[in-house]
Image (tube, rainbow, N blue to C red; front, side, top):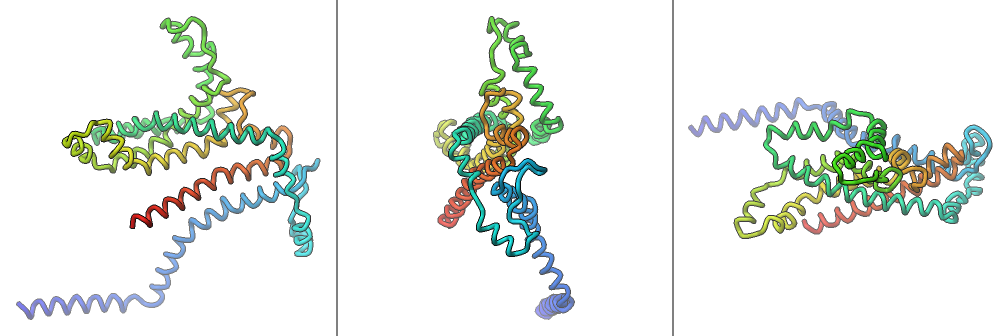
Length: 328
């Protein structure tokens, strides 16, 4: 028996040694290059689709408006060589950014956009959390159907869905006709061209972005913890706030970011449902680009908007990383 065990062990060692011998330098080099390439792909994506466009927009924001095509005077060009580049660096001007500070229109647009996006994100969370929780507690055979129903609006054009809300919310629309038919109201409600219409449009359009990360988090939760808490005398509402909600915080944060970030720069919904009097940075940016044809100022508006959105995310990620290190 001992000899058989020794023979088996010796055979495994010989096979392992043969496998290692078969892995030549070329094989190890190919494996190392493949692993490096996999890591390099996300950085290349960020370089070409974030940093390069950011650099182009930032360069335009430092230029001056001109009656030409494109409507600005290029700066930091390489046509005159390094000497021309250094001369351009000395002549750079941030007057477009100073213009944003001097004009109260842009500050009010930023503040209004952040407030509307924050309220819309909160409303989306209030509506989306029960939906995600119900999907996570539904029978396994029913979950794919519920998930498909959440994703189903994406099969229709975003613009068509917003136009559909115009037919629902306008004074002679379906909502007012139904409420008057039921007898709830006597005169049509004025919902169109108000902040309420914007909130409805944003919540409807971005609800799947809130539900999906919440569902992904709640589905993995061990609901036996809730049963154990209730067996120990914990009320259902208290068990929710002490167990369910803390465990679902990663999904809450992910969903809120996915809704808040695009809602700040939203243009279509405020323009169609909010009317001409709605002040949001997306509409201001569109007006500067296409109505005023002031590309340098519009680029400066876009750069400030990007910083407003990116910097809080960076601080949050650092705080989360520090919290994880402290837990270890």
